[in-house]
Amino acid sequence: MRGTDSISSPTSICEDGHSVNDKIQDNSVKTSGWNGTIIEGKDSYALMRDCNANSRLTAQHYLWRELLGFLVHPDIDTRAADLRVADIATGNGIWLHDFARGKPSSVDLHGFDISLDQVGPKPWLPANIHMHVWNIFENVPDEFVGFFDIVHVRLITVVVKNNDPRPILKNLNKLLRPGGYLQWDEVDTIGCSIKTVPGISARNLDALFSQLKGHDTWKYELTRIMDENGYTDSTLYTYEYGLGMARFWSDVYMSTWKEFADNALKTPEASRNLEHNAMVETLNGASIMVPKLVWVTKKIDTRDQSVV
Ligand SMILES: C[S@@+](CC[C@H](N)C(=O)[O-])C[C@H]1O[C@@H](n2cnc3c(N)ncnc32)[C@H](O)[C@@H]1O
Image (cartoon, rainbow, N blue to C red; front, side, top):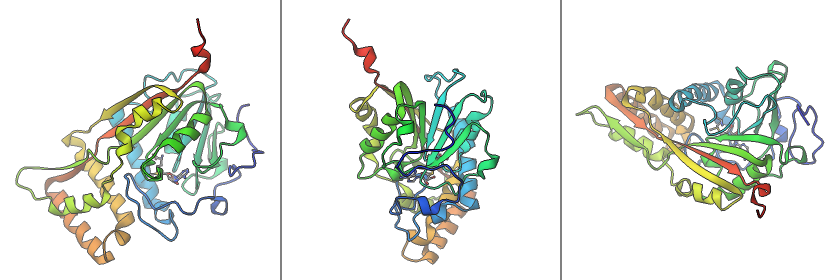
């Protein structure tokens, strides 16, 4: 099946327009950013879907692409004219849009997210990009079981529950055809640091940043966890930007802070003061450095395992 326009599955998926808050199944999802920070919010993602949040996703995307030098890792073959690709937790869909460029219109692209409020109107999407509301923890709709050649997911640290990526890996595995590839991109929320030019204090930036850091130890075991849960040849690639790019990235992370600030410290005023002082340090020559992690893995193809 190609280019599904209607979905009969009884699960939560839909593709009928993008103002679909009423169709979001899991309202318990916490406000989140690039990292593992979890902050309870009344409307869990409201802060993250305005123009600033959306612009941050867009800017961040191009920084990611420049740093990695690819959208899909070169280990993964993307040449097939009938390639089927899914981008899970697609946000504003910028990764899919970028991938669609330069590909034949026969390539079939699907974005999934619990909310499509950040995605442009459906009539304006390229004909081969389809957007769906889907919660990553819910059943994979029948239409998409074993459907995709490539599944891509980026920046869902906060979505991982109890430091355990297995339920997510299980669902992503179901989306893939045997032998299909998963590429999972994350920030290294433990191996991140602050860098300054000599003699500059970064006390406030450090304090602010410590609120954003995570304890996502699953990332250090993900390769093994993948290999034990239906995937094979799992490989982790690490990418670090140099000091020349540090300010660009740091500004993105500071703008993430703005989206949480009111809830992060005891009072919104305390958060604003910390942000102001951290920004002064940034102007003087301090930056947040966050390595990027990319896992490439393949769904086990049981047909490869027949006894010779
Ligand atoms: C930090 S954004 C990343 C967006 C996009 N992947 C990117 O890199 O530009 C995280 C996305 O995860 C989505 N998300 C959160 N919980 C989810 C869930 N349970 N199922 C599917 N998507 C979810 C959010 O709606 C948000 O769009």
